Image (cartoon, rainbow, N blue to C red; front, side, top):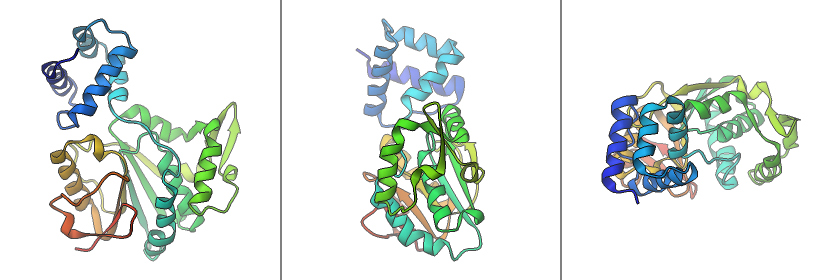
Length: 269
């Protein structure tokens, strides 16, 4: 059994020793992941987990990977991508240059999905996609653009449901059970670590996507992040969140208007 006081100690260690601040993550979700990690790695006690995190840099990397959420997929929620394709990109296409930020991008499947949308809208050439996450390990996967070949059938179906009309396999090369996506897509992606808990705005964007990340934060941190996105969006820019996320409780909600049933808002002031 892990007590709340144990989690407090571990979170204090993470901040004091490494600068990672997980104190405003949803406590219930965080506790589930720590309990799961103890079980997976067969720690006989919480004290031994804590000792390992404090003293083993290689295990710290695993700890951060496990307690941050890295579940994503290409063209997840096809109706959302269909809305981006039909309602958002035609507007962004009127701009001379397009900057898009994928905040908390995990392993980058959604970043590559967006790059494909831009290519099909003939906008990729004058776009930059900024892919950020606090976890350097997952960003290395974004940089490589290599995903399991076994998932391509599902991704192809989601791509078609989003309005895609090409042969999805034309975007990657299959080799040894892996799908390597074209360099034409990856060379437009700028990869950097960024911590939504503590880091500030670093550019002005036309579209920010942060999907299925806020659900793991408490309300105060969600509000802090939404203010960061507001400060990072140009006027009439777009903000896209996950299906269970909203900005209706936030101090910045009056600055945005929801575009449609999908979780896409347009900044109106």
